[in-house]
Length: 191
Length: 191
DNA sequence: CGGTCTCTTGACGGAGTTCAAAGCTAGTGG
DNA sequence: CCACTAGCTTTGAACTCCGTCAAGAGACCG
Image (cartoon, rainbow over all chains, first blue to last red; front, side, top):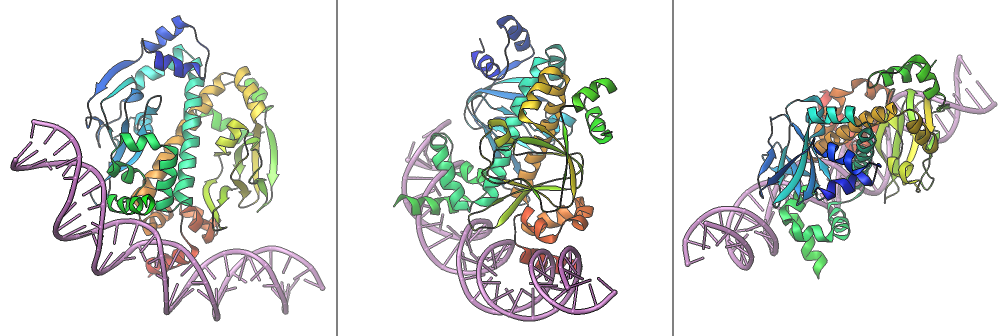
């Protein structure tokens, strides 16, 4: 059934169909409505989520009471509050569906058992985290290197489809500036 | 001999002394002088480095020709250009010793062989990358949440010893602002 | 259609940069 | 072990990017 998860595993490790079926039994399936929360600030992040359809975003509420989006996850991406998930400590983040979304989730506990029973999954997660870490490093580089305007132009060049699926104020939030300024940038770069 | 590396492995996985000795044979030891480069822009990052003594920094040269430090690594931290190391593609970064530094390094090739021969190391690296990813996420959160001044105050509270070991212009570079502005912040917060 | 989100526009202000110059500090060679 | 130089830090003035505030125009949903 979950071909999308199987295909993602196949990118990193070799496993048989039977083995996959046992692995798959550690996961649960959820459907989340647009704007519904998977995690709110103060809760312990109990699950690691794999997006099979739709978009999630992770955000926090900053000192001024504004929502700051720090990450999006679309199909084939994992999302969790790594810190809270690892330490089972209260999270400082929210996780919310941007559009109606479907995920496969695994609890901390189930993940431990999965890794013990299927050691090949260590390799899978090592690869996934390695990639996520590399992406985070590039993200930090961009934040350091680019002006806000360049951040937007770079983002809209690399993820044009995203601009269609996600409202502008979330893009602005993700790129760390105001909707007003985004509007100004767009005006300049249309004409 | 390399007790520090063994101790770091012990934090995440159980291995015998004999096993460690075989694992250790995959590594090389290097001594790097202050200001010496381990990697320069355009090169392929061939090694993954574990710092046993001293400090490394990773930086790139931005559009204005300034060095932007994006990461420090002290004792017990791994450092590499993950992207270049994984894909064996040219790096956009430099890696340089801040003070005289000692590292254990492992090549891409040796790391692959190590992981095949000692699958427990998959778990070790999974944990290391997971932690590094969580740290990168927190870093991004700080960059979004704090003003430059708050970034400095936060940094100097959490890593007071670092301020002693590392020159101010590198701290400024790491926190993504100018040495002049750092000087201004310090003046304000001393009196 | 009425109301609540979302996007746009413009005026103003402030955090942080740039540039230039002077003061310090530490390493190096004689 | 001192003197000199290059590199690091501080100061101040001018400037700019971008945030804040306020208000209006669309757009979407019940």
